Image (cartoon, rainbow, N blue to C red; front, top):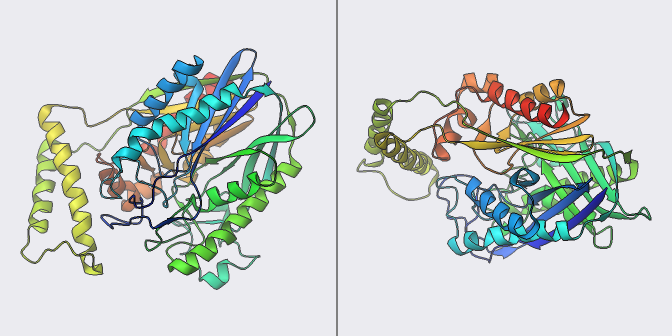
Length: 449
C-alpha cells in the first residue's frame, strides 16, 4: 500500500461574509483566528488509487465538486469515483453552499476555490509512498448532545467541566474513528479522524474566520508531528450540536479552545491505541440519485408564494435587523425560494434535482458519503446492515442538500424537515430516512460484495 498527503490554504480574505446562524445577518469577517485548509489523503493498492479531500467549509455545491474532479482527473488520470470531496460544515468560514440568505457568496473566492481544493488532491497523489494503515475507535465524550431528543445546551460553567457528559450520550457519537498512516520506520505521515457532531461552537456575533472545534483540533494534532497532515471526516451531525453554541462572543471563543482540546485528546488517544489493519484493495463508487420530494404542485407553490409576498409587502415591514424582524428575513428567504420553484415548475423543469451518493473503500474501512446533514438514527440503521468492517457514514460529501431527518423528526416537521430544504431553494424531502439508508447500503454492497 502507498499513501500520500497534500494540504492547501483556502482561507478567504478578511471582509467576506460568513455562513450560518440565520438569514441576511451581514456577518462579515473581521479577522483570521485560524486559517482554513483543504487537506487530502491518497491511498493506492494494486494499481488502484482513491483520494479524499476534507475542506474547512460549510459545504460545497455539486458543481464545484465537478470542477475539482476535472482538474484532478486532468492531472492524475483518476476517475470521478476515486475522488471524494467533503466538508466539515464550519459556520466561521465563507458562504459556499446553496443556502439562500445565509451569507452572500464571494464571487472571486468561488472562482478560485476549486483550483485550490484540486491542488491538495493532486499533491496527495504525487506524494504517494509506501505506508501502513492503523485503525482505532477511541472514546470521545463531552463534545456533543442531541438537540432533537436531549435537553438544551447546559450553562457554560457546567458543560466546560472536565467530567461533563450529555444526559443521553447514546443519542450521539461516543467514540471517534481514527486512521493512522505510517511510513516504514513507524513514523506518522498523516491521519484521518471521523466523528458526528455539528461543528459549531461560536455564535451569530462571532466574526473571526476559523474551522470551528474540529478544525482547531486538527490543527493541534498536526502540530504534534513534523509535516503531518490530518483530515476531519464529518459524520452524522444533523441532530447533534456541540455542547457550547450560541453563547456570547468572548465565552464562545474561550469554549472553542476547550471543546477543540477535548476532541484533540480523543484523536491523540486513537493514534496511540491504533492497531495495524490490512488494506486488501481500494476503490470508489458513485450513484447519482434524485431523492423523492413532497408533491407540491404549481398551484400550491403559487399559493405559498402569494402568502409570503403579502407578508413582506405589509406597510409596517422593514429591513432592520431587530429581533422582531427575524420573521421578515426568514419570509424573504422563502419568497426567493418559492419564486425559483414556481419559475422552474412553469418551465416544466423537474423539482427533484439529482445529487450524489459516494462510497470509497480503503481496505476494511468504507466511507459512505452524501450531501446531507444526516441524523444519528439513519446512521445507526446503515451501520447495523452494512457489510464493511468499519462503515463510516459521512455527511457534506460532494454536495450540500440540507438535512436528512429521521422518520420521527420528519413526521414532526419544523426546521430540519421543512425549513432548510427551502433555504436550499428546494422542496422538502418526502422520505429521506429510508431512501438514504437503502442508497448507502447499495454503495456498501458494491464496494464490499
